[in-house]
Amino acid sequence: MTANLANPQAARDHARGMAGAVVDAMPVLPPVADDLPAGVPADDLLWEETIAAGGYATRRLARGARLRLIDLEGDACASLLMFNAEMPTERLNVADTVKVQWNAYLGEGKLLLSDMGRVLMSFLEDGAGTHDCFSGTSNAATNAARYGDGRNSGAYPSGRDRFLLGAAKHGLQRRDVHPCVTLFKGATIAADGAIVPQIGPYAPGRTVVLRAEMDVIVVIANCPHVLDPREAWTVTPLRATAWRGPVTPEDDPVRTATPEGLRAFQNVEDYFRR
Amino acid sequence: MSIDPHLSGLSGTVVHDAIVPARAPWLHHIAAGQTLRIVDLEGNQAVDFLLYATADHAERYSAQDTVAAQGNLFLREGTVLRSNEGRPMMTIVATSVDYHDTIGGACSCESNTLRYGHHTKAEHACVENFLEANLREGRGKRDIVSNINFFMNVPVEPDGSLGIVDGISAPGLTVDLRADMDVTVVVSNCPQINNPCNGFNPTPVRMIVAA
Image 1: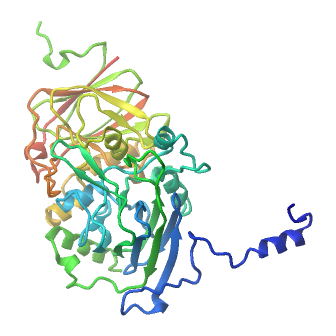
Image 2: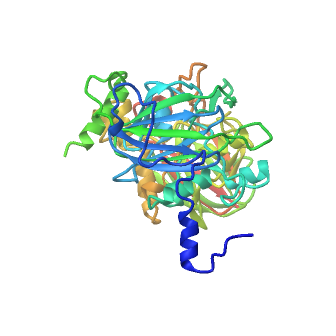
């Protein structure tokens, strides 16, 4: 028998009675993390959240902030949208990201480039090595075909529908959900153009650390890779942690690694020259 | 009376026939069931190509949905060009070039500064054409997504090395696209002069619509 919640006071007490509940996938406020890298003061912690299997999260991160993503159980699949926070018409451009860097694969030292010739985020650490710039993410139709349902309100939400909700919370619309990159689940390209998915599952705890090179909005959807061959909708929680950090200095090895990348950083520095 | 070789094998009545000058944009509405033939008149001319559902411009071509659905990056005969909601927009029903690109994106003034240097910033670019054409119909920068490059060649090497290399097209080669829904086609006849996508010499292309 349920409690009698016939009046607002009883409903309030019932709601308040939930305080302090802890579940696997939730944000921690204020953020607490006992595994920050050496030299990062606890005061600089910005964000600590575990994103559910099939869930999503969004965050605005300031230039210099570090974003660490951990595949807690080996089957996380972090698809990312990325916008310039102060002018979201500027967003991640996957084609420029691979073309400008003359390479199809993401990893340590690689840059995520905007459509305005600037670096949105860079890869400081990559303990995974299996990422994907090409396949995008699932949508309601692909999930309905694969799993029998793809609705946000159902058991098998799609990456695109997660992106729509996440982007909408920054005032963005359907037309703003742009081509994405996916971390932890990967794809390699064969000589004939075939996409070879790298799905795992992998060892728990693989970690990627990104650095915000501009003020960015990041939308993260944690849904099964669109080319995951497994019959069951399979995905596990993703942990996101962010902390403040210094703006990239002139002698930073990621900044100076290639002439194209250096010019992308120079374009960022020019943008912030105000 | 001579027969126009560019019409060879194209069935139906020609309802539109245009030459897109070198470096120029082109916008056209194509009804479901009609076929668009693109003719690479002088050879190795990249045709940067975007699609919008005419009934709902927030539904548009998605390179990622297209390649994921076929498990392959290259666009060949039979490739279904899919929208961001996974629906068929157009189908490549014939092509006399083996394959076309959809990972290389469009050149822009801004990406040119990265690829070639800031001395190229003032050069005309595909994104300028995409913007100019889209702005006529109320679309803007938010509507520009990863595009197709017909007649352009972007191989991926085993180590991931990737780049725009010499084309595999030739004068008079064509690609035929059947519209699977009412679509708005936005094209940039690529003005790039710093890589081999246009043989360092942008040239006109021909657009023929048959119903």
